[in-house]
Amino acid sequence: MEIKFERFHLQSDLLSPLQGFEPVSVPTEVRIDPLTRRRSRIITWGLPIGDKLDLTKMAEESEGCIFCPGNIFLKTPRFPKEIIPEERIRIGKAVGFPNLNPVGTYGIVVVLCQEHFVPLHQCTPEHYVEGLSVSLEIIRRVMAFDPDARYWQISQNYLLPGGSTILHPHLQLIGDPIPTNEMEYLLNGSVSYHQRNKTLYWNDLIEIEKGIEIRYITRIGKVHWFVSYAPIGFNEVCATVEGHGSFTTLGKEERLALATGIVSTLKYYDKKNLNSFNFSIYSISGEASYQLLIRIISRTPIQSYYLNDWTSFEALHSELTSNIAPEELCHEIRPFFP
Ligand SMILES: [Zn+2]
Image 1: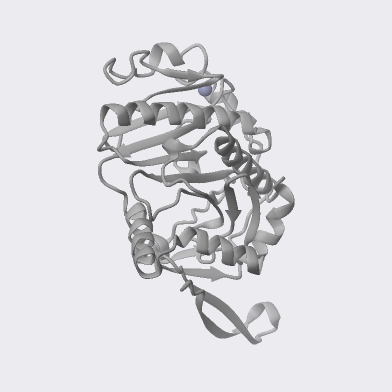
Image 2: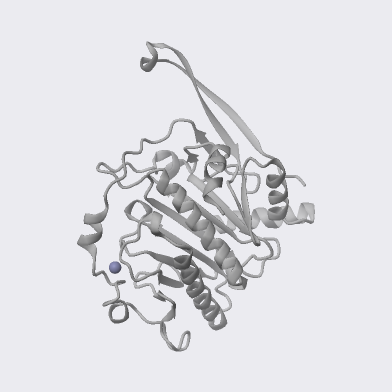
């Protein structure tokens, strides 16, 4: 195994007005991701988070959106019959249909439930099991129609800071014959690791993380939940699914395990007064060196005076930051998992 956890310690000295202009030294840690070699900065001072904002008014004002029960089957697009004869896919309360504003070959929306607004602490594994089951069925059908569409992202943008224009909980799926940048980083790293070591990076990583314990959260069936060594976002929680590179091969057990971990993470975010997040499942078919990954990150919450967490550092230097040490996050979030 050649997985290395490299880091640099940076130190900034100043005379602090907060401590009578005495000398203080503020550390920053730069970590190198063992797979992608990308740098992340762990900053020890977090962005300020205010009190929990009451979102009731925002929910009431936008009630009756196109995803709400009276509108969804009248106002959302339908699939062409040659791809999905039923035109929309419905499992339980979740409904999937084409995205009116796609950003790729196959853009799909999966509405998770009939409720217009579900606060984080009320999200349930059932919401996600049904949403992921609809996603799986749609991706299988699309790939039967177009096998070249083998790169899929199954994502959620929750609330305005997460980039969602519609409050009603929904997933975004995008399928393409070409990978995103991030998929390419993951895939290139996985393939070259496999060529050098003849083992799967993801299995080796999990074995190491389980051994050192400080970033491994838990195992739910075949799904291993952990905090990444070099996060690319705030409060980043990840999972990899043993034996699967593509979302399309997941069984019911794996979908439930993913749903359970997502909801556990959201309960932790809620406890920290966070209310917005993104997640993405990176699904790649036909690549034996790759293993399915999900990343969940929090965004700075909606507050009276919103503060964006994407600064010149992230946007223009591709240098990603985390506001909490991964090991501390792992310690804090473990009790929220089953
Ligand atoms: Zn709605």
